[in-house]
Length: 214
Image (tube, rainbow, N blue to C red):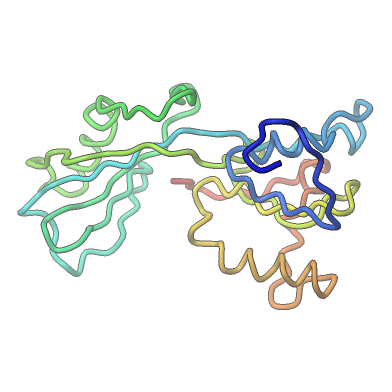
């Protein structure tokens, strides 16, 4: 029934779980993670929402048009946005300072206290910047190793995953989309072997780690 709130099952041959920050909940609906203890069936999808802030800065005397996308070793990132002296900046919070995910309100104190001192130290021109606007959104955050889960679930043999990108999704989506299409249509990876990013690594405790996740 169109526009109905009544629960209705949907039959399909293949499910691609690409529900972003809510992929873990979608997997829960399929019973993933509810099996006997210490078995593969007991392993949940370790993806949850994590709120992240993006700040638009106005700094007329900031770095010029040839400014690259800067990621400081502290984790602060910044890039120029357009021609009007605007820049985009952000920083992933430490584990103990993760913000509440029940809303998408922006914490401007996080910029003032955590981002601005680091950014101004790296680029002195930002001593005189001001926040023009900001927004918040959700990462589909993989709590296991902050990298994507890509491929077929080893037990639910018609559910594929493309989730847990932890902020990499826009960058990696072309490759992830092609890889998943190859898995479904050809039965295996053809262009790149991305099997290291499969679900099995979670059960075997074999994380794929990076030094910096922004």
